[in-house]
Length: 268
Image 1 (cartoon, rainbow, N blue to C red):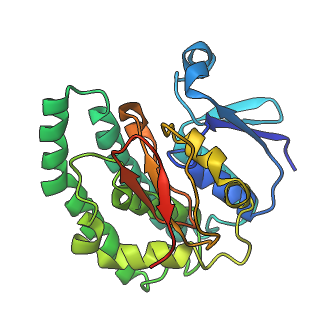
Image 2 (image 1 turned 180 degrees about the vertical axis):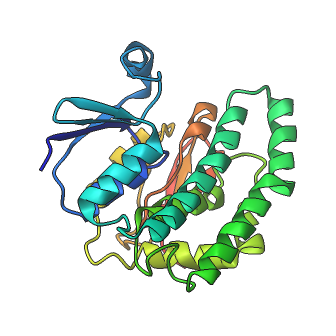
């Protein structure tokens, strides 16, 4: 087994999360090198394309998120051996990357320009891609995107749906996936329950110390959890810069709050 080091931002989500989940689910040891946002300007120059994630395997460096996803998925049995099924897996991942690229381009736009661009995405590209992904899922049996089993493609699509429904992206309706591709919402919920071995990182760590999760998200105060229910709804107060994060923790739905303190409530 290779000596692995995966480098990505210190939060649960984004382009690095499918690889983290795959390695954790597969029980493959790796160094989870989490970069604080404050340290990113200093470390950016050392990255091959000035971006993350980056994987180092036995001293060899690999960049680009889907290349990393394919590599770790092969290590963990989450990538099809059949050429056609592998292509279907790639198709789903590349479609998610198309959507992600368009969303990322809006992150640092002036407010009015960002609003206009995201509203256009919500009326055009995003529903088009979600509908097509939903159709592909149905055509392949309705449970998984390839090989009639869980693959890295399922993890990547599920992370996109979680992000879109989280409310963290201004001007993108949180019910957009539910309205245009409810089958993808069902898929997301199933994927987070189906794996025979749930990842212990970051889920278990967050459940044991939810205040740390609040801080990672950049909350003005740490999230206060008033219920021990593992499905409690954590309401996290965010700063404007934290909009770039993806709330992709698989255990609890997360809502956003504009107040100056953080709170939570127990499950409905």
